[in-house]
Length: 376
Ligand SMILES: Nc1ncnc2c1ncn2[C@@H]1O[C@H](COP(=O)(O)OP(=O)(O)OP(=O)(O)O)[C@@H](O)[C@H]1O
Ligand SMILES: [Mg+2]
Image 1 (cartoon, rainbow, N blue to C red):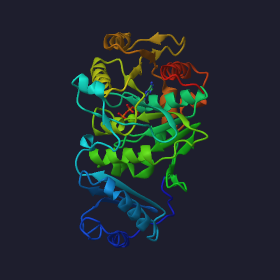
Image 2: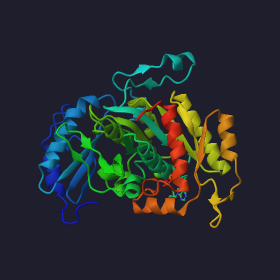
Image 3: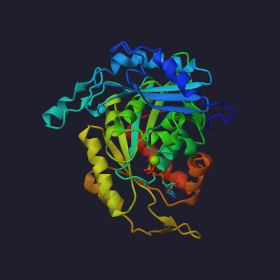
């Protein structure tokens, strides 16, 4: 939450400060050069998109930093955020050091660039994804991350859902992240996790208007400019909560980091399963291993006996996983405490490790850990 006592910085003062930062291409101030897009001013905060032509993004990295410094010098700006965005979809840009996957070429797949590494001091990166929205992907991502931490692993959670970030609510986080001496953002500590969310950087209402390319660029920064781990204490696993669908943000993720696996979340309804199929195919296409399928809201436990009441019919997701040739990782019940915990910023798995739902998550976490050969 923004500090309610902080004042909103003066728009003219902000624009004047940005005008003093020179666009190297045109020699004009950033504002005159038309590079200041989507200026957001809030209590103690200022941020905007520095939108540059495709191909120029790397050349503007220093301009981005200078713009951030300029914003911080404006009275009333405690937190400044400048997101460098390319004008066209970054899905088509190839990050430095990327090379074509020979396997992809051989199999005649789209020539997706394959990144050469993960974020600094991160051992494994996995994505939690779904083809469809509202299937409980964020709930699964957050609680799976807690379950992985419960196995003694060092775990990070990156909420990449730029359109509807949920980690701040689900983990009870607030306030912009701080910057370390290395100029990297310091993730928040929450429930034994290192957490980072676009929701901590921008007003969620503002995030709604971001277009795909901008969102992708922001994700790149959260991956590359966050101090997830250190040399002495590397993160074992970074869990990325993706927005629904198969768009730019998903592609950016696989272009910016090695992706060690994807967990696909689905609900029992056939429609959601069709979407899950799409999700599985997308990761296969980009060469990221699908670790398996999690069926969420799979059944309703009988309030008195705990026996599953299969309100949607059972076994659909398991059979579908078999058909798709991916592992079935588990069935998460409909659990009101899971929802309440998410709404209250107290993830159920972290607060009630012995409960039956937490046990299901522990099983999924073990499967993920084993699939990635992670040891704590
Ligand atoms: N197993 C469950 N039992 C009860 N409620 C659940 C369960 N899983 C998710 N929910 C609830 O369903 C709602 C949607 O969940 P969530 O936000 O995790 O979905 P999502 O797939 O991330 O959605 P979006 O596509 O909007 O990102 C939330 O209110 C959440 O608390
Ligand atoms: Mg979500």
